[in-house]
Amino acid sequence: MAKASVTPSAEERLILTKKNRRWDEVRGRSLVTICAIIMIVATIAVTIFLAQKGLQSFTVNNINPIAYLTSTNWNPVGENASFGIFPFIFGSLAVTFLSALIAAPLGIGAAIFMSEIAPKFGKKFLQPVIELLVGIPSVVYGFIGLVVLVPLVRDNLPGIGFSLFAGVIVLTVMILPTVTTIATDAMRSLPNSLRQGSLALGATRWQTIRKVLIPAALPSLLTAIVLGMARAFGEALAVQMVIGNTRDLPGSIFDTSATLTTIVTLNIGHTTYGSIENNTLWSMGLILLIISFVFIFIVRYLSGRRKI
Amino acid sequence: MKKMKLSVLLAMFALVIGVLAACGGNAGGEETEGNTSGNSNSGGGEASETSIVVAGSSAMQPLVAAAAEQYKGDNADADIQVQAGGSGAGLSQVQEGSIAIGNSDVFAEEKEGIDAEALVDHKVAVVGMTAAINPNAGVDDLTKQQLIDIFTGKVTNWSEVGGNDQEITLVNRPDSSGTRATFVKYALDGETPAEGITEDSSNTVKQIVADTDGAIGYLALSYFDDDTVVKGKIDGVEATNETIGSGEFPIWAYQHSYTNGDPEGLAKEFLDYMMSDEVQTSIVPEQGYVPMTDMQVERDAEGNITEK
Image (cartoon, rainbow over all chains, first blue to last red; front, side, top):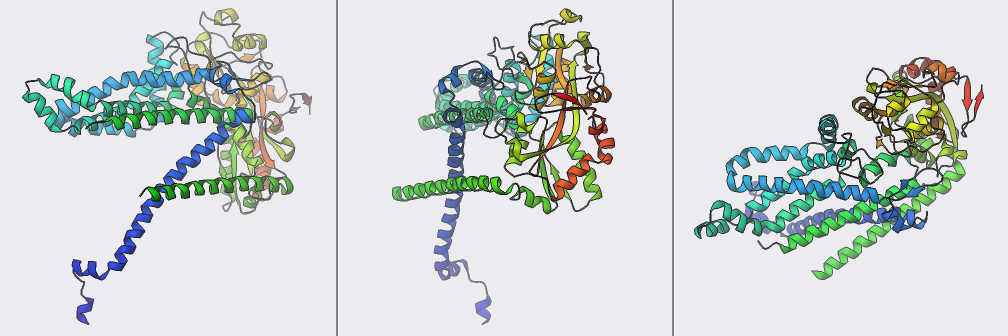
C-alpha cells in the first residue's frame, strides 16, 4: 500500500502510461495543427474578403480598372467624380524604393560592423539599441517627423517641408532596424570556415568581407532589404504626418505627395459603407495586398536561392 | 504525408467557405430584420440594458464624451461609450443597427448609401468654422470672393489680397470629411478646392498653419484659443456665437446625432439630456460649440436658410 503511493521512477512512468502517452501525442499534434489551421484560415479569409470588397468598385460601380490604375485624376466627391489612383501607387512605390535605397547600405554596413569588425561591442551595445528602435511605435516617428524634420526641411531645402523627401527620411529610420537585424543574423550565420579559408589564402579582412562574405550572404541580405521595403510599403501613420497627402503626382522629391495607405487612413472613416468612394478605398487595400504578396514572393525566391 | 496535407487543405477550404456562407447569411438576415422592425434588433436591445455605444464624427466626439461623462456621474448604472471614427462610419453603423447613436457633421441625406428616411435626426449643437491663417501672411479679413479665389488656386500670393509677399499654401481636409463638406458648401459656394496639404486632425491642421509661412486652412471655432493662427473674418464679420446664431456668419454646421427609428431607453434619455439646459448652457459653449437655443435661423439638408 505504502509502495503504491510512492512516485514511480521515470522509466516506470513511461511504461505505465504508455496508453496516455499515445493520447498525448495525438493531443499535442492536433493542438499545433489547429494553431496552424487558424492562421491559414485567417489569411485566406482576409484575402477573400478583401478581394470581394475590393472588386466591388469595378463590378458594382462599373469603374474601369485600367483607368482606375493609370489615371492621375482623383476627385471622389461631387458630380464629376473621377477615380484615378496612379499618383498614390507612384507615391507608395517611390517612398518604398527610395527609403530602401538609403536604408540598405546603412543597414548592411552596420550589420558588417556588428558581425565582423566589432562583434563584442556590437552584441553588447549596438544590438540592444537597434532592437529598441524596432519597438518605437510608428506614431512617435511620425510626430518627431512633423515637429523636427518638416521644419528642418522647410528651412534648408526647397518646398514647404511636407514632401516625399520627408516621408522617405522617416521611413528610412523606421526600416533601418529591420534591415540591420536581419542582415546581422545573415552575416553571423555564415560558417566560420569561410572566414578562416579566405584569411588562410592571404586575403585581408576587408577583402574577405567584400569578396567572400557578402556574396555568400547576398540572398539573405536581399531578403533583409525586401522585408524592410514591405514594412515601408505598409506604413501609413508616420508617412501621413509628413508627406502632405496631395493627390497630384509630385514634380520633384521636395513636392508634397500621397501614398495608398495615407489616402485610405485619411478617408475611410468619413465614407459610408457601400458608397462608391468607400469601395474605391477597399480597392486600394486590395492593391496593397497584391503588392505585399509580390514582396513575399520575392523573399521566398531569394531564400530559395540561399546556398549556405 | 502528401495525402494528409491535401486533406488538411480541403478541410481548411471547407471551413473558409463555411465562415463566408455564415457571414453572408447573417448579413442578409440582419437586413431584412432591420427593414421590418427598425432597430429593435441589436442597437435597441442594448439601449434598454443601460449600455449604449455612440460613434461617428470625430469633431463631435469631445462634446458628446463630455456630456456622457457628466451624465454617467449622475446616473451611476448608465454605460455610454463614445467613440470617434468619422461621420461616414457613424452613419453606416447606426443604419445597420450596431450602435445606438451615430454622430455626423453632415445631414444623412448628403451621404451616399444612407437611407435618411429610416434615421431620426437629433441636432444637438452647431459648430462654426472659419479660415485659419498663418499670422505672417498679414491678413485677417477676406471677402468671400477672395476666399474662393484663394482656395481654388486663382490667387497664389498673399500680396494679391492685401497681405505680405508670401506664397499661399492650402491645408485641406480629406475629400469626404464633414468639415471639408461644410467649408466647401458654405464658404466656397461649392467650388472644388485646389490641391494642398491634406490632414485629418484639427490639431495637425492648426499646427501646420501655425508653422508654415503663408498657410491657410479651416478650423472649428474651438481651436482658435491662442495667437498661433489668425481667426479670419469673412466679409468683415467675425465668427462668434452671436453672428452664427443670427445667421450673419455663414460657415456653420449642425452636429447631428442620428438614431435608427425613434430612440428608446438610455439612448432617448441621453439625447434628452443633451438637449437639456444643463448641457446646452454649460458643456456646449465650454467645448466651443453654439447651443441650439442661440440659433435664430434654421437650415435644411439642401442648405436653405429660414428664420426660426
